[in-house]
Amino acid sequence: MDGVKPLLSLHNINMTFGGIKALKNVSFEVLPGEVHCLAGENGSGKSTLIKIITGVYRPEAGAVIEYDGQTYTHMSPVTAQAGGIQVIWQDLALFPEMTVAENIAFQTVIGRWPRFVNYRRMREIATKALNRLGVALDVDTPLKEYSIAQRQIVAIARALVGEAKLVFMDEPTASLTQSETDHLIEIVRSLSASGVAVVFVSHRLAEVLEISNRLTVLRDGALVGVYPVEGMTQSRVTELMTGKNFDQHVRAK
Ligand code: ADP
Ligand code: MG
Image (cartoon, rainbow, N blue to C red; front, side):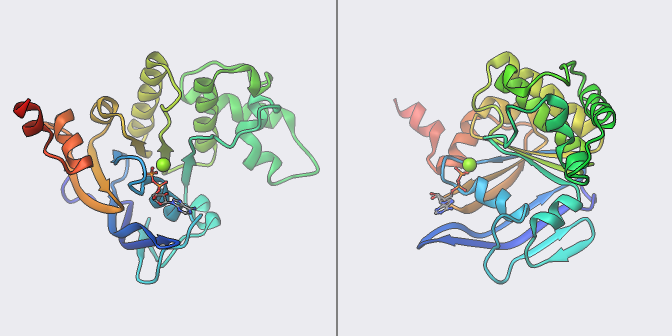
């Protein structure tokens, strides 16, 4: 993918929480339509980086954020959302008592016309987004009747309604079974094929290697490096994430 202009490019990102340097001069780049894994052990700064990109946190002075042709010193949630950046958080932030259609179309329909909800339009929007993902959920069913994996799909459908260009998935497989994970991986592939860039956050090595084109590794808030996934092995990724020479450790036993 040499020569492709990045969709997102971050430089000099620093973030401190009460004396803990959560991010130390990190750079990060996402190409249009790629699946990019952001990997690192717990506490390495993955979620903090996503929160900076989506405008939840403001990075320390000196940060440069280039997104879709614009340059920013920090993002705001409104700028991020208007620019087509969507996040599927681990805890999903959905509404279990509301129907599938209401959850998917919430920002679009309810958000804009709080006193008047066009149910027919809302169901159409939800059905279209679910069809794009190749899943048939009943849009009139309350979300609480579906599994975590199915709710995950609802969250992705909602991101698509927002005309996403860049979707972050923060540890989306943490509570999924293997077959649910496989389905999610298929969905990520089809998103990428339709031109949406996906940043997939995980510390599970097998899925990191299976799903992504490129890999950025963080360790203790610092960038370790950016790697093509082709030819990468699980032990090499472990070594990059932990800083320990895993191969030699195994050989020494
Ligand atoms: P990851 O997502 O890779 O597990 P995080 O970005 O959540 O890591 O956290 C990076 C570091 O910053 C950790 O040491 C964590 O405890 C700290 N941290 C994250 N968010 C906060 C916060 N809101 N307040 C204080 N410390 C935080
Ligand atoms: Mg996290």
